[in-house]
Image (cartoon, rainbow over all chains, first blue to last red; front, side):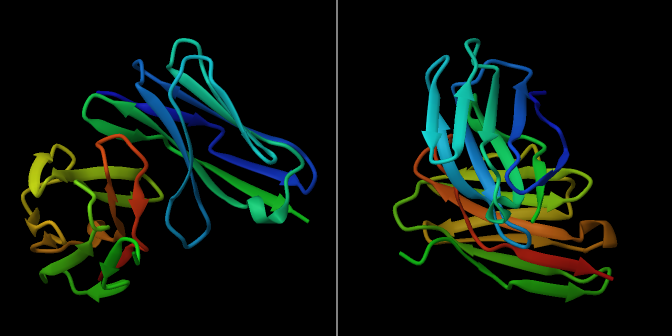
Amino acid sequence: GQQVMQIPQYQHVQEGEDFTTYCNSSTTLSNIQWYKQRPGGHPVFLIQLVKSGEVKKQKRLTFQFGEAKKNSSLHITATQTTDVGTYFCAGGATNKLIFGTGTLLAVQP
Amino acid sequence: DAGVIQSPRHEVTEMGQEVTLRCKPISGHDYLFWYRQTMMRGLELLIYFNNNVPIDDSGMPEDRFSAKMPNASFSTLKIQPSEPRDSAVYFCASSLGVSTEAFFGQGTRLTVV
């Protein structure tokens, strides 16, 4: 079946360092969404990308959708302790949204 | 709108007991999803409804799990009988479209002992 994998599973950084998580789908996606889940919380929508090669920015966060619409990345510049949590990508596929495996980000002050 | 509302927030039950989780979606959202989250398996889609009709239940683990949506403002996920391996956080989410922004509830943390 359709799968969406994310790497790395876990990343520990020092505050101020950059962070990137990658998302790969086994099939072409109609769109890609990114969510953030704080420890003990629920996933919260961050952004949606629809177009091939699309790049969007939200302050220190940069989101990219691959040309083939099968992969995506989230890059955080100069991480802060408030960035701690699990980042999920979610790929829009035929009649459903498939969540990736998630990347847990730990930020040491 | 108060967002997606789930109850209870925490549930501890003994193996073999029936468990019912409840969800109130955001008004006007046509889609409702039930997810299960565990460390081992991540976030799994169990079932989703469109306009109260179950569309895809391929993620429901087995016959012990059932879900209903009797009206646009209420859904339940029932486990009968419950087993320790059902322990997880169960999220309900709603959205306007099948692959548009999903709004998650706070989740129900289920522990089966």
